[in-house]
Length: 232
Length: 53
Image (cartoon, rainbow over all chains, first blue to last red):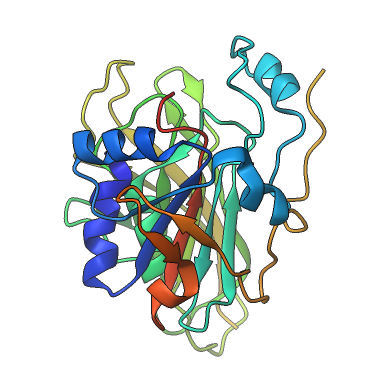
C-alpha cells in the first residue's frame, strides 16, 4: 500500500501520519491487519469531524457521474480527498486536494512534498546544451498505474555568467500517444549576471530512464523544457 | 458539462492556520488526540474515501 511505504520514510524523518475516513473501527481494524498498516487510521463514523472541518463534499453523486463512477448508496458523507501537511506547531503548511477520487498521489510524491526533494533518482538522465545549461528530470516512482499522480522534477543547472529570466516552462509530457497533465517541481540554480548583452535561447530534452512498462504500455516519459538564458 | 473548479484554498483548514483539534478512535480502538499524538512533530493528515472501496 502506497501510504504504508510513505509511512516508513515519514517515520524515519519524524513526521507523523494520520489517515481519516468514515469507516467503522471494524473495517479499519481489518484493513490495518490485512495491509500491515503502521500508522493511525482514524475512524470518523458519521463524518462528524469531516463535517466540522468543512471537508464534506456535497456534490459526490454529481462528481462521480462526471468521472464515470456508478452511483452507490455508500457514496455519501464523503470528504474531499486530500492531504494536509502540518509543521511542528500543528500549523497547516501545505494542502493538496484532488478533483477526483480516482486520482491518488503516489507515496513518493507525498514524501517529497513533506520532506523535500531528494537529490534525484540515480537513474535520472540529463542533457547539456552548448552553453553548459544542464537539465535533469526524474519522476518519483519507477512505475505508473492508472490515475496515479506522479511528481516530475526538472532540475535546470545554469552556469555562472548566465541569468535566467522568465519562468522555464515544462511544455509537455508524452505518454505514448496521450498527453497527461502532470505536476512538476522545478529547482533552479541561480547564477550571476555577466557582462555582454547577448541573448540565447535553449531547449533541452531529458528522458527519464528506468520507467517500467505498465499494463497501459507506458514506457518512458519525455520532458521538454525551454527557457531563455541571457548574458547581461 | 464539466464541473466548475473549486477553490480548495478555502475548503477546510487553511494554510497558515493551526489544524483543528481532532480526537477520534484508531484501528486499535484507542482514542487518538491528533495534536497530542503528534507530540511536536510535523504531520501529514490524509482524508480519503473508504478503506473498503
